[in-house]
Length: 84
Image 1: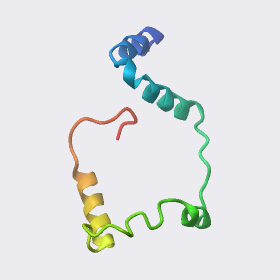
Image 2 (image 1 turned 135 degrees about the vertical axis):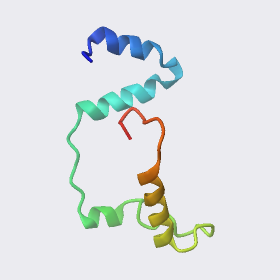
Image 3 (image 1 turned 180 degrees about the horizontal axis):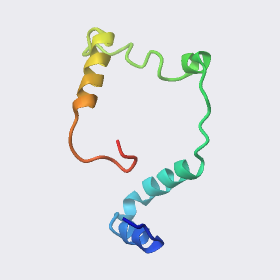
Image 4 (image 1 turned 180 degrees about the vertical axis):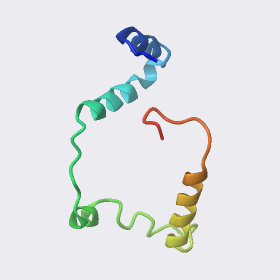
């Protein structure tokens, strides 16, 4: 399918104005496709490490992560704007 500027504009007009900030954010990620390479030290300083520490509903965090990955791998349905 050929994509023209008009095709993009037509699709944008179908998105509610309240969500246009999400569209702009997504377009910015496309424009600035330079992603920094994170080191282990960067990850250790991030908010990701320990994010499940205070959760008492998860149980074994490794098993929980495995279950989430399995579910994501078998998930079916519509994809988001990024194709996920």
